[in-house]
Image (cartoon, rainbow, N blue to C red; front, side):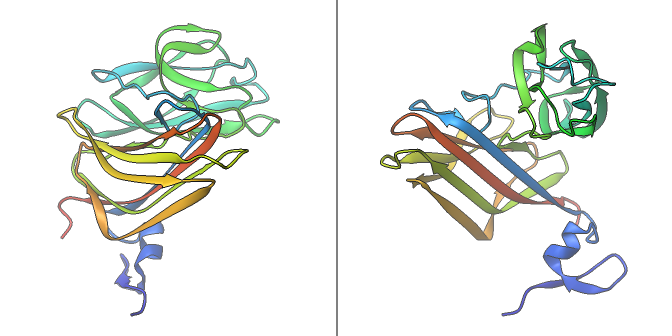
Length: 259
């Protein structure tokens, strides 16, 4: 069987995946989510650089953006501005650009319930963020908020947080997922979990995989469905400490009123 084709907005046929990536299929878009945890131990953690669990505001809130480096600022050598894409109290997508001010907090204009994307938008001569860029609430000390919701690790220029929430009016279709883990000894296993939760707050396990210095790549011929206002994330736990873990999601996002 050949690769599926679709007609784009101009009626020209082509490979479906390419047409979606080009924004040529109405109501369809591709969402790539990648997470990385450089030091997973024997307690379950989300796949993101901070370890532990990821928190979210109990209600949509103005958030504070700051860096642990004074060089991540409007005229600094590091990151100068960042883009935030998240969901408001109605799960409607909101986007804004924030100009950094080093370790001092800068408030967002919009209120957010979840963060879906967080990346460096402009940089100085260093070409990357020099500190950890944090987004959260509460008192900010040396660029770190009391309650952390997401972050950009130094030099990464984008979040590496394996968590995504589907906006209202859309359905997400997980078409591919990858989980990998490695350790110096390579003698013990790491178990990864795909978890989903909705507005009821119940966290449900969607998949479990175990690897030992290797990767598990899942191609969903029948996609894993993520309804609107539902979130998916990857977490993991090691049989021993000091594991490096990553997770990847490829999600096809389709507007609900598209036939």
